[in-house]
Image (tube, rainbow, N blue to C red; front, side, top):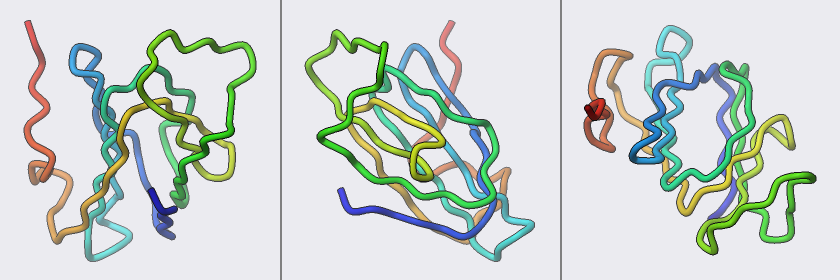
Length: 113
């Protein structure tokens, strides 16, 4: 996965433990478009809930000290040069003209019950 970078505010928008999906969203009051970043099959995350900018890249050589991931699937994604870390199978993003209330292109994030 190539690195991706946006100079705009982002926020952790939704996380579903049952589906292991993490959605981060750019705040549209600071930009005319919205970016959704989805991490799939999340085994571990350590990151703040708000970002002034957002950059993510995959690092095959990274190992989080003190963290053992039992799942053989997945890889490490480094957020903002090490401010945050996510271990997941995929990271993808989509930019559109939606707002904070528009559903994500990545589908509904319905709670399970």
